[in-house]
Image (cartoon, rainbow, N blue to C red; front, side, top):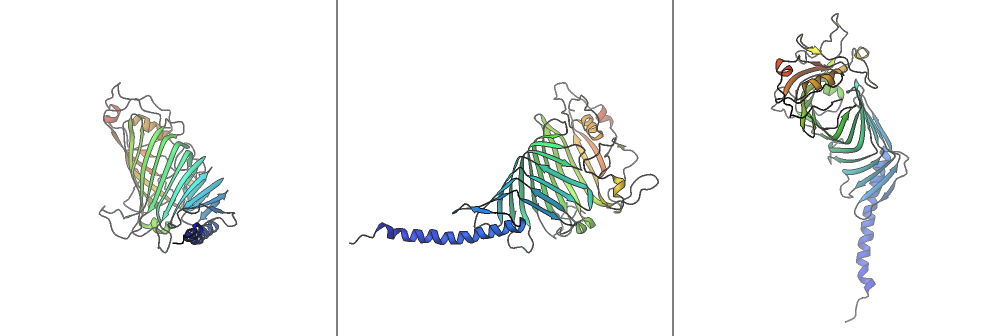
Length: 369
């Protein structure tokens, strides 16, 4: 029998590789076009054949400026990875990223975060008329966060944010609360609020509305922001747990008593006379004072804080020096109300708080800020 030359047996393999390279090149062109739409004029190099697509972009800079949301991001370098057969899922490795976000209709909601490095994963729902985020996950290393929502900057050894859209029109069984349309999960390790001790952060925020959120105006009508959980803990255990609801409200002109009304009657009314207000906090970087925002939308927040360090918590809200305090044997619950940009209003200390039993062997409370 006549033997077949070795080179002949390689022809199907070469043909297969050439055919796959042709298909892979089409996917590579799609990725290059996706990058070009976000970064016009950028020189994009595509590599990763045969199993993946990898695009490297130097000094990327993108931005979005709309009436409901203004956001921007930049970095020294971005490396984008994608599997050819999964164009809806991309993974990013970022060098020296900086991100900013603001809600123009809420002048007091602004935030920025920077870090030496970050990794991100974006998964979009395929086959939809508009892009829907199935999951966006970002992990920053040695992050520095500033926001008008807090009077001090925040540092963290690692900080994570996970966002997903859950558009629905199906009513929920949670009473008057509309169904969840988006979810934001935050977590961090070695989180420091200003000069505070390193803490572990975990938080879950749900944005609710009767219809999928396509604009701030639609959400403002009947939507809420539900902080279903926020916890801070150190190596000795949980320090505090916060749950709260925030609703959009219109700021009218100030009344003679100096208090602000609420355009949504029956929800988040002004603080009762049996509550005490913490001292004004330091000016928030880049923030806007309430007097400058009269006639615009803000957020009214009401909730409860459960803590084993009530004195430290009140001092942190008031911007006072941290007291020397051991943890209470039983957690203390404190009611909280706040209008965005104004000092929070806390319920007065009950006797159970001022005379809460403490044991010397219980760990001391950490400095919160």
